[in-house]
Length: 152
Image (cartoon, rainbow, N blue to C red; front, top):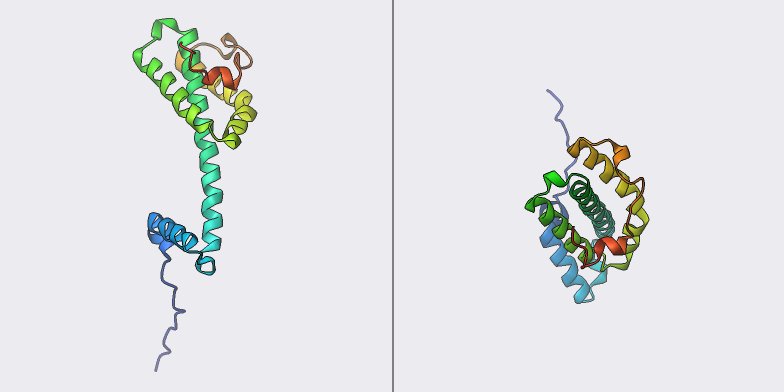
């Protein structure tokens, strides 16, 4: 007679793993109802941490795109297009909304110089110009980049 293979039963996937939106709604409902002992704290901590990382990553990405398109606009005037202008305007609008968060505005200020260098690299690749053709540091402050009156 052979021995039976015994498996440890696996726990059913949690709502967090199968339906994130449903899980979020459930957590919000539990909080609203004051049922704090039923909150999925480990996953909630993970989710909130990931949201902060995601928001910072989005802010960074939009800033690099804005700066790279502005550099292309400024340093390759023959290539100017409606598409570039729309990209610049859209990124400024989105960044202005993101910067409504004091935390994300501070983050954008902190990363502006490094984001600018990434944008210079992108603009150099796209325009074929050497990196040295662009200013060595951002010619504007974050507030100036986000100013509504800025028009390429």
